[in-house]
Length: 239
Image (cartoon, rainbow, N blue to C red; front, top):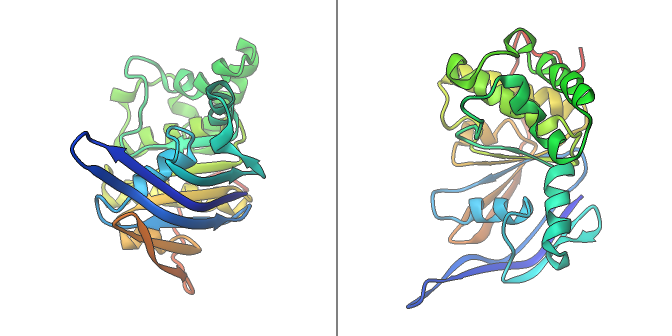
């Protein structure tokens, strides 16, 4: 699924070179639920941007489904971003004046899916995340947890190979955060590959394995022996 080998990222600020990633080796197999954990400045978000085809490494290799992603032209990278990767961001990244259902449709617009099919699939995705009755609501009419669930519906709309979630509970209270973790758990149970970036040990313990980052390097790796399972009454995935 995902394999990175000897991956490095250096930012040239003019007077000094900043090493954001240093010779990272990492593998995520299909269906795994993995956390990248570390403090601010550890390199975890830089890695997420590279895995999401939003940035290129300075050196090393990145393979997604056997394809050497770091060698592809921008047009092909854009296609992979839209069709193979579902993004979930800490601050939701929803269109402010657009109803939930239209926000969920956005990846399908870029894929050229006809309008009627887009709407049907978006409504189905909102049902999956427990927000079928909120389809016409705009982001400012939704709670933080509901907005993140809309973002997850958008992330899964194209049936991606992997979900990349960058601090998905970081802007939420504990109850809303648990709802989001419950949804990610159910998606994982359905075979979705999920990679979560977090600084929160509690969030990381919901995954199967944790890579610990510091100063751009993997400094530790652990398999979560007794992982936490979040549950929610409304989650419908797999019901």
